[in-house]
Length: 576
View 1 (tube, helix red, strand yellow):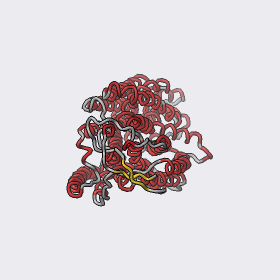
View 2 (view 1 turned 180 degrees about the vertical axis):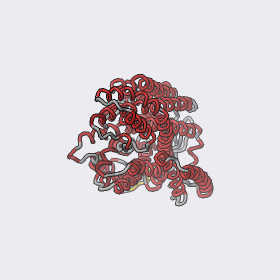
View 3 (view 1 turned 180 degrees about the horizontal axis):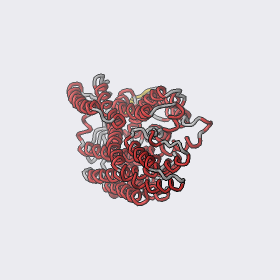
View 4 (view 1 turned 120 degrees about the vertical axis):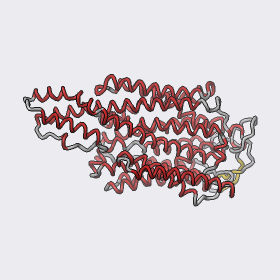
């Protein structure tokens, strides 16, 4: 392997210059499609693991004897370390090479997945998930920057759109994959295959990536920001941790203190970065990306969009499994139909719709997604606990179409607003904004959802009580006052519990004659209260999507990618 310095036109813009077929006028990378396949698989693996654990919680709890707090950390550890590394990894790729950092991340992700799969206790699994999330953070940010470099402008939009669609729907695939693997119980390993499946795929992708991805760095190699990195890391941790854990902990005062501290640290970080940039011409966050109003506004709208989507994904699984009582496989396979709509929207947006209608495609995507959520809320209100998969699938497809119309072209549109030399930095910012939006969405909708579940407890009890009385009478039990009091207490305590797997003492009946009827009544009450909470969240998220759709109207009517009009004299090192 040898290193040459070649010239690439991936930076400064000259309005009106003709599009270049490839950087620097050189022939397109002949291995670009193989490289695309590798990074697509990597991105899919990374983002699937943000949700794959959600449907396997009961299996992990039973096998590792984990309490609910530990399970929450298994989920939160990945999100926390993943989000924390995103901005840092974008700069590391610019400095040390995107291919190198990508392969290091892939190797770390593969090893961490193996450690997760062989974990012997909850503590080992939590630490392994921290490592897995950090490695994923190293990888994901490099992907868009790699695509920005290896594809000529004429092909780049479609490549980024496909990547956005696949990774955007990966959360749904994670639910389906987790449900299937737990249901199949391969080799009697229960939940472990959800992590072990990453090992052979990761090894293959690591070898292929080393062979087909070419190296690239920022044209002006920035200096390592030794103070900015810990400041950014601390700010993200202070922000994401309370958003992830606040509900379970009851939102104590110190969680609000952490959020306030995050804002203070963020202000300090930005002030330091501006000063550093003015002094040495290099910073962890290149403020040049914010010179583009379109990029800045688009990033804010992107953040808003993921607040709605992140909140939906969170309560969606709770409703299907806890509210309707579906198995992980049933819930996962039903959820996977969302991806059909994503494929329809993403398959038509970049090449057919966006060139003709521009930003209006994004506006339509937000509105269609919102309509799907509203239709879902109507179905839940009408059918309640009797809701079936075949009734949900059409609204899943509609929502997925709207989702696909947004995620496919938006990344390319926003990255097209900045010079190619800032692709790594812009990619890191967009990925960070996406993860922070999802974390805030989970926190916001979690508060709204569980508050509404608690508020609906009285109505849920009233709905389920007649059937319980009838069942008790049929079993020959005439003295029902104590049982009915226990039932009301049970419903209230379940609504107030932060651990849905924990069964309050008031919900346990030792008499076999009453236990079955009691269980059915509790399930009916759960479906009523969870349906109420889910409807509220669907309408809230629909409103956020409408606001996001309006925000898309502020973007340029048609994308004018910076790279499509680029003429640069800056060399970029490329390792052959």
